[in-house]
Image (cartoon, rainbow, N blue to C red; front, side, top):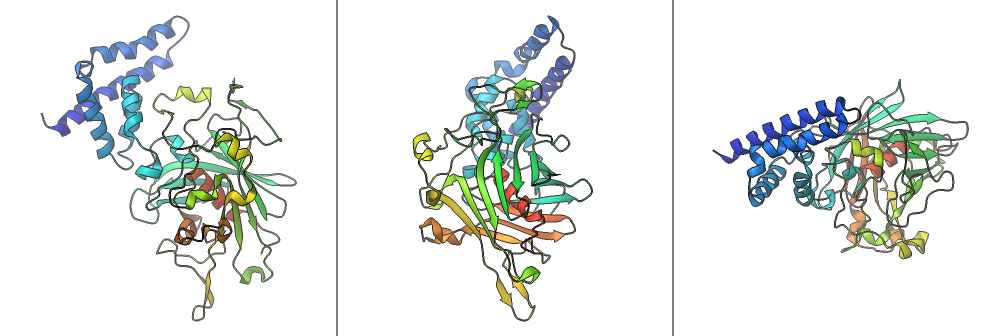
Length: 399
């Protein structure tokens, strides 16, 4: 039997086990729930794969992870983690964080820094009617295709501010949902924004005083791991004295990322798991601890604003022939818009190295209600998406 046939047989096997597991869960009640819960394990024990030597099983799963490098084929890697604890443990070791692998596999990957080498090319679809925004990662080299859904956001207007609630679910974007992961809040003028993470972005993170705990679904979050509003970024737009004739000027202070992260050998904090008990209902999503570095609690509490990473938009140049402001988006942006921007590390970080010239986040228009979003280390997909949402908001004092 060829290795490809072996893998295909393996997929069919755990596919049938997974379907059997879902049917069992839908009919659980009382004592029957314990019997139904045991059935998947019994099915696995009777499978031919239960007799496979651990070394060979590891080799097969590692090769699946390596061969299925992009979506939609990447879903097979996620399916492997939902078979049993043994398979999940092997995949925990095989799947690396996006910073190293450049791949988005599990939902927690959206909270982890992007790749150091290269960028992750995504795009955003806007629905003006429902005031919702959807983030996808591209499946091809095209500017936009069917894409793999990543995140969704819904705009909520309030008397003194505007909130953009960000969720892992396309439909349920309420703050009480188990898939809610954070929000973007603007001031009345739309010139200042704060990005809040629903989960601690690093050890010792301080929750906002506005609300220290909330109920997710019908389960109260464990008091050991508080959930609430953790400020991770502050975005500001400068007043534009030229009105709509001049480009916007924006500044982003990344509260959860040290300025040293963009220097050689620097590290950015990496979230390792979603501390939500209600997410245990998704068996195919492993939330595991990684070997990536975290910011020390003591040093983070004493960090001053000067030590935080500051991003600024790259200044465009005026094109005399076209009579407009221009930036080199390397073919990823095709429509002129005041919303278009590129973010680089500010000189205020004090590094003064060539790292400051690298574009960390790029956002631009390619069609009606369609925009590209490319990001890289040290920011995550969640942070990049929130920053781009700030560009959609109406800015009374800047335009």
